[in-house]
Amino acid sequence: MDRRQFIRNTGTLLGAGLCGIGLGKQRGWAEESSAAATPAPEKSDSASKLVVVRGADTRALVHKSLEALGGIEQYVKSGNVVVVKPNIAWDRTPEQAANTHPEIVAAVVALCMKAGAKQVKVFDNTCNDARRSYVTSGIEEAAKKEGATVNFVDERLFRKVAFPKGKLVQEWEVYGEALDADVFINIPIAKHHSLSKLTMCMKNHFGVMGGRRGLLHQDIDQRIADLSTLLKPQLSILDATRILKANGPTGGNLEDVQVLNTLIASTDPVAVDSYGATLFGLKGDEIGYIKIANEMGLGKMYPSEIQALELAV
Image (cartoon, rainbow, N blue to C red; front, side, top):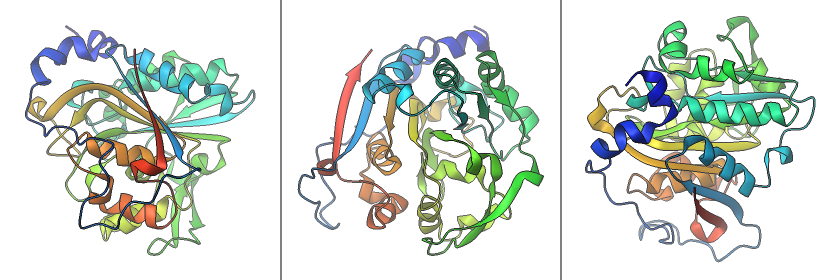
């Protein structure tokens, strides 16, 4: 089977072989915070809405999740310039689960174009060579096929901006196209991370940051939360069609991959990341940056504050 066929249906290639790999059972979403943590709040009238969709049809996952959130037209208007920000950081194939699934990116791009977007831009400030990462990931080809503009990051377009609510990040270089877009849609993959335990929506903001990004890894949990004080995507869509459960963020070994055929979407990235943690047998308040972001009022972490709708396709 060639990579194009894999991209069309991840489950066909990996489902039988990897679904049984020993990943801890998903924590029940209804279970609240750990005993050592601050007690969860009572049910809230201002709950964040979160949609979880499961199924083997990758594009249908995108369509179903966005329909449940009111349709892409709620977020993308005719004439808008849209940034779709996947993880394209690594020179890895789709089945290695280090980057966002290309078909998810393509499906989001196609919906944005159908909604009348003037332009849809797809990019990432990669860790490996962008020329290889864009191709090997399958994202460049898939996004361009649906009409997206896919360019490498141009160092001249970074500009220093203030993070007035940041505690450790108070000023940093951010990619201008992300700042200037009418709509910013964040589409990371869910995977293990050697420093932050997991990388999901909020961590994916590193891909629009410039400067000495290595410094962002010092006191990483607070810095991830700080970035979310300024970077506020209209939509956060977490790719958990296959997750990298060890040796992240680079991966490379198929034994570290598990196919879950799941997509999680919300306007609240903290809620998405909190639910995403359960896929790894953890709770939101066991991930430092999720807990900090919740305490900073950047989103909801506890199930009692999140209206979760679970669907199948």
